[in-house]
Amino acid sequence: MTDLALPLARRLRRGDFLRLTRPRRVCVRAEQGVLWATVDGRLDDIELHPGDSQVFDGSATVLISAIGRGAVLTATALPTAPSWRERLARWWRSPAVVALRA
Image 1 (cartoon, rainbow, N blue to C red):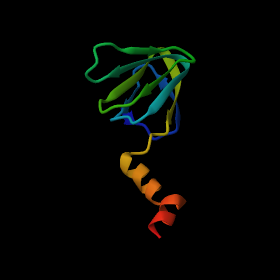
Image 2 (image 1 turned 90 degrees about the vertical axis):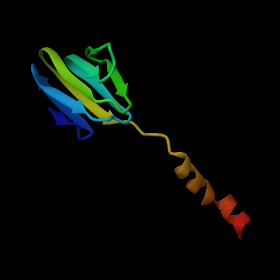
Image 3 (image 1 turned 180 degrees about the vertical axis):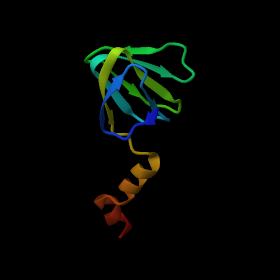
């Protein structure tokens, strides 16, 4: 089992696993073959067929494996929304606010 370094394109053979630890807006797409994903704490599993994708965003660990002979997947990180602190800092540095403070 290995953790992902994104972006990633990987071929999984039968018995190989990838682990996403606390994924933050990670999109996994099945390019070839069928993928099986299980999220720690969820009762239902996820099957991804070629062309299917799933966004994982949470604090639970996700295990991904190939069903059958093998599969090819791509995984990319999606942009996250800025936190309230980042938004406040951006607003504070905006030209209109700087002009009001001057």
